[in-house]
Amino acid sequence: MSTRVDAYIWAIRLTKTRSAAGAACRGGHVRVNGVTAKPAQPVVPGDEIRVRLAGRERIVEVIKTINKRVSAPMAAECFVDRSPPPPPKEILASQPRRDRGAGRPTKRERRQLDRLRDSSFLVALLAVVVLLVGGCSDDAPADPNKPNTPEAPAQAGSGPFFGKCGGVTLDEVTRITGFGGLTETVNNTSVCEWDTTGSRTGAVASFNWYRGSPIGREEANVKLSRDVTNKLEIDGHQGFIGYTQSGQICEVGIGFGADFFEWSIRGDAQQARPIEQICDAARELATLSIERAS
Image (cartoon, rainbow, N blue to C red):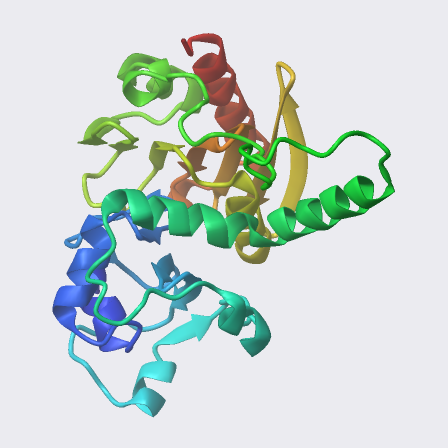
């Protein structure tokens, strides 16, 4: 028996309210079996759900489907929690906080905060190196009007433009994956999804384009949820590949500065095939997206 993903994550107490669960789905913060999920996305036992809340990734495997909120002990019986441990309190305390009464952050401020959280350690390390080098240098003093902070390693959105669905057509996805009866169920500026059943209970292929989101964080999540994760290089571009034979899932992510894209292929569990075939399809689709980027 299936249930809506927004109802499920609220019922097992990942979110405080049903509306918050729906908002997380609409904001692209919920993924089912590696694919971005809408609020009405059905989930069944065996599905993997990832929910990003308050800067933390929660990863659960569905054991029993429910759509009514229950007590914490009862909720714990409905899923297996595969989430990474929360960050230490020292790190949480060091993160920047907005002054009381300052109002809600603008979209620009939220993007800046996200980048700051993701690169805080790197920036701190670079700052120490700059100070050490500056202290040992005999050169003239730096221009006082020039900022003294290190530049970011990459600018969000500086990667190539991948076009509609990563530049790949439905016919090509069908041919490369070998999934018969695929139909396009999601198509927007950053996500495309093709499904053989319309309810995600069969084979699924998806393309996700992330701008201003570090690939390292996604790779870490894949390492926690997949049986095998390896480094991958396609046409000189670095990334990762992760797969699980039992789940018939293979994911390929390729980074471009502060951007990356990800192809996720999930086979039909009722007609299991070797995971190598699924991963070959993911790699071939990723190669096409790179070749057709502008």
